[in-house]
Length: 466
Ligand code: UD1
Ligand code: CA
Image 1 (cartoon, helix red, strand yellow):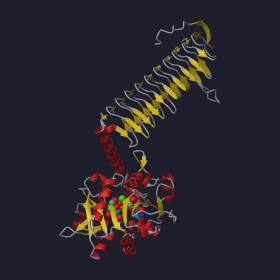
Image 2 (cartoon, rainbow, N blue to C red):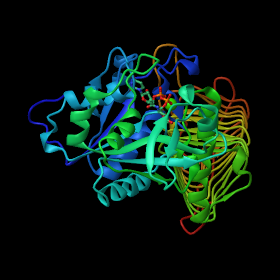
Image 3 (cartoon, rainbow, N blue to C red):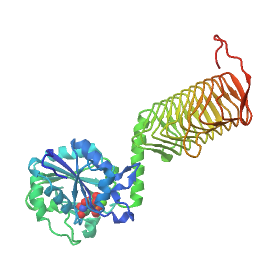
Image 4 (cartoon, rainbow, N blue to C red):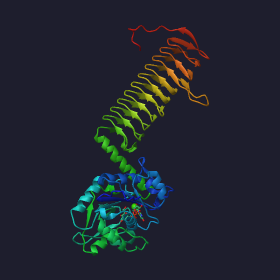
């Protein structure tokens, strides 16, 4: 990881993620468990990156290669800690792998604390710069301990030590000020003192023991209690994962509500933080907005809707439907029970009703497709009416073939369009037609296989097509 050319920042961020995560009871490394669509550790990496403006070090050990492959080789400066011998050992490994002479301050956070904000890390850094001691740590005051270490202070409120729950006396256990596991250290002091950490009764080197060490040296340790205790939610179990996801979800929805979006029931709405929503859009319950999805203004989404990696315009109504990798322009209504798949593009004013499926196809402005249709690999021009049950037979068992339907054509109910096929502008097909040959503009084709039986009047140039 540490090539000689790497320029190391003045303040280095280290994210610890080498632990086993045993309590997740999972084959997957704990820090890769997704929280609203992203691996948990991504949040920690991003917070550090945002706060410090530089790439963090990520300490990995248990299933290290799985973690590294999932995140990508450039996502962090990876340091290996194998076997994991405690948080103190983890930081020591990181600092051994890095030329620390350029570094003044080290920020340490946990890979399993996804709600921690960049602003909070910045506040920690500021508090650290405001005193001469070698350590500043974040604390949280909470009724339930989550198994966190307790912050021991003297009568004057000076921090003396952190005691792990497992080693705490009953009086210490009653302390409600908890160690968050997020610290700012003077780099030089840390490098000198990590080798002096005692071995804990559990056979680990605890980073938390640096505090007592500094105090013994007559140096000051400051603790900064956090404003928002939810930021300190740690994830060690599936229950905590669910609670962290819910808190993260609330945070995302709150941001959109402040921007003018309505959620009918925020507790039953899933919106990933990569999604954007326009003003006065209303999201109904049991809707899932995922990935790079963009929703415009004044649209109604849901109930029971799933939209992934898609763009939806203004004033759309999407009801009980699934939209994946598709584009929906303004004033479109879809559903209930329709499915847009990859490459579907519905132009402005399209009406797509019940039980429709569109894949890799363009439906021009004002196209109507009300009931039970499949349109794949097709270009449908403006104003076409697609009768109930119309199917593009686009697959011959070996290859996919295209369908083209000219403007204002009228496709009768239950028409089978055997591709490759072209239906001319203004043409009609009769109900139940099986169309195997191109239909010229302004003609009517019927039957099985369909044949042209009549010419249709062309609209006069002045006559509006509608
Ligand atoms: C740690 C703190 C505790 C604090 C809590 C907050 C210590 C000894 N205790 O306890 O005071 O309240 O965090 O979350 O530090 N890790 C490694 N290598 C290791 C061990 C752990 O990288 O050898 C990583 C883990 O993957 C995890 C983080 O360090 O991301 C914290 O380790 P964990 O075992 O969860 O520590 P806690 O017992 O929660
Ligand atoms: Ca933990």
